[in-house]
Length: 544
Image (cartoon, rainbow, N blue to C red; front, top):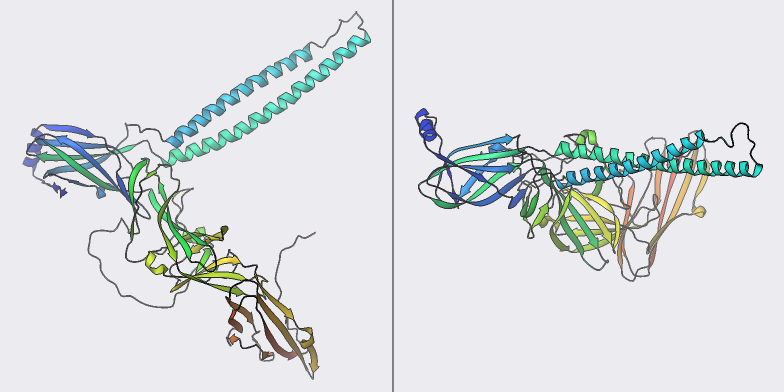
């Protein structure tokens, strides 16, 4: 395909020459054939074959999105042509075809209004009947007496009929109230959709010149805003003896007011706003990474590299309007592209549509983890290797184990090293207990000081039929006062961090096997001081 030559001249004589020639106007109705979708924005491509005549032809590409960036317009053809002028404008006079979502909302409004009118008519009829009954309650006139039997019969009729009318009026008013609530909701949604969509369309006009009558295939490309994709994952672990299945997915959204129907899609992590100027390499400074955000683990268990981020909207979001917000993610410096094999249709309704990028089967090892001082549960971790070659970027992952949905986690690729640790929840077949040994725990007065001995027994049992790799975590208290003395008595060969007091045992536990560990230490402090040797948790309770 040959790139067109955009011939420009500021010469007044040239302009007069062009205007003096006859220009054939050609209205071009095209459709989006393919899209390169970026994290923010998309490059759309339209391919159309046009019959043009010898001389000057003004090609007017109609019904393009108003989100089009005029500076990004590019055109190419399969024939040698000259482009004399290129421009774009928004056509405020041409009304676009109504979006399906807007049409559905308007239809719902009509149906509810019709239903409400029917109920109002019925309600009015009951009110008139009630008024008639109340006005015509005289029986027999003022001089003629009425037999008791007839009076009782009339009273029963009025009472029963007015009761039925009142009950019906109450029900009808309740129905109208429900309809009004639905009408308000739909009107709000319709207002929001209309605010995001636009009836206006962009027209691109291209003046081309050719030496002969010919049929030309044109390719028009341009960038649009209000579109993009968000990375996401699905991670499934079937069994401890099998690899982990990772599905890489994208949520694609289109709010350009032009639906994309059955198009080829390419997803890219590149920045479409970058210029064509050659890049300048700046110094690469290394330092320790310090996260500005604290990460809160919402899935059960230990999660080293996959975490849920407690997003602070005030810090991370840039509010574009009341409904759309953005957050930052980390992506590799070298851009990645994913060519989607199947064609997709993406309506222009700003909703996310799932597109599968690819699937991978990853080798995994499994490790169990327990901090019985904090939680009696034993947590299973899947340790994934080989993920670095998957061009992964930050995104949420839905995690499954043995077909059970465990929750959603956030993959932060910045923090992940060679191995990606994934929490797979609690493993009920592995038991770890922590019991205080009263026989070896004591408190005694030694002169002016109190000495407390604390001893615990940890028992791990594997009820699975295969060996497991397990890591137990506990701790020794750390003194922050010279008058408080902590002495380690027994830790059963644990790896100890002297600065934090953290203890770690890691071992292989055979099928059906149990293992006992002993932890004991002493605390000596002045008897007139209060030293909490037992840590407490805070919980909110109702106050009476």
